Image 1 (tube, helix red, strand yellow):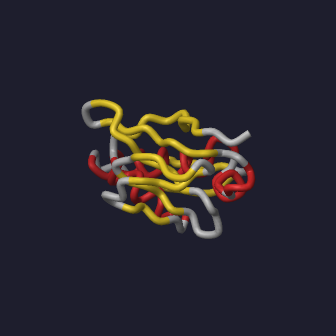
Image 2 (cartoon, rainbow, N blue to C red; image 1 turned 90 degrees about the horizontal axis):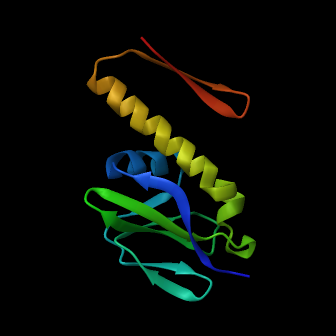
Image 3 (cartoon, rainbow, N blue to C red; image 1 turned 30 degrees about the vertical axis):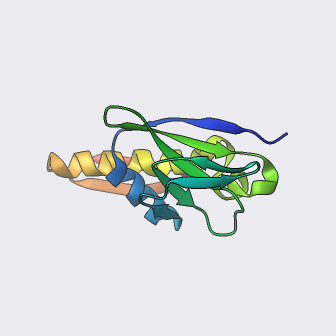
Length: 124
């Protein structure tokens, strides 16, 4: 059964989310006010469009300087195929981009490498 659910991630930095989208080759649609899911469309402040997927992810303001991600993870929508269970690839890309941004701000050197289905960051 198709339904909307929240991705377990609170977004505090839209710039890092935009970079995460760029990293994954998906589109951050700034100021798009609706997103597509099984029952039609839902309201949002921004959206994420994934090439090859029928559905989109809605980005909705949920508090001061924070956003939540809404999606329909029903398999026919194609989002799980592209982003993994509970949007794991998007969550990982957001976390990596947020850490790199903060590390650069604090003038750390960053070494990033892929390891066993993950990413290792070494800051020095």
